Image 1 (spheres, rainbow over the protein chains, first blue to last red):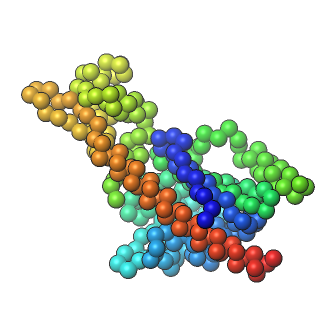
Image 2 (cartoon, rainbow over the protein chains, first blue to last red):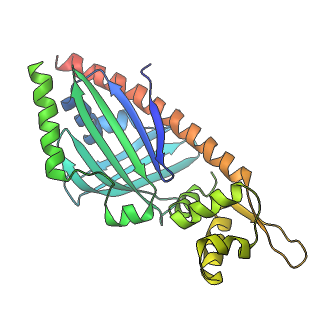
Image 3 (cartoon, one colour):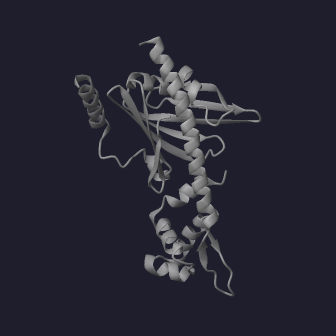
Length: 156
Length: 108
């Protein structure tokens, strides 16, 4: 099994990093196409995801529903930023805690046929409301960096 | 699951993090906490209330004094939750490995 790195870079942030043996195009599809997401984002064993709806557009909504022997839970939110095959910024709320919105950032980068996904969860309510992360890069610059990464891995 | 969202909410404020850092050194009364932060009593009380509701601190009644102390159980709960969270994502990503393997077989 590939190692998963989990850190808490600030008191209110959790960061998870994992590499996959697949090109970024496939890893992106597996994160954004409902039929694929349903097959792996099922959480603890015994849970299934009967409902998975994703409107992959800025401001678009998504909804996941998990079911297990005697329970049901859902998560929902909207996409704040989408840079295809590079970055997703979305809000996440679980129906059991409707007042708590988390800001989730997922960054995808490919090198040597391996794709690394870094997921940051921001539990800071201010960051969630403003959609602002402590990243020095703006979206345009980040998109350029992602293209540069892709170009470098293509030419190596 | 403990009220982890209220824990994270409580931790999201720098003053409250500083109060916790002070209380880790030992219990303190509201007046003792007020001093280094140069805050009014109502505003320090508000922060203490948020921390107490999140289960991060507790109040001890000692005559007329009400010293606050750290609640270690709350920190243990955060650690347990992080461990569970990690296990769930390990399982998710192991399944994602299988999905990606199939995608590669379909479209080599």
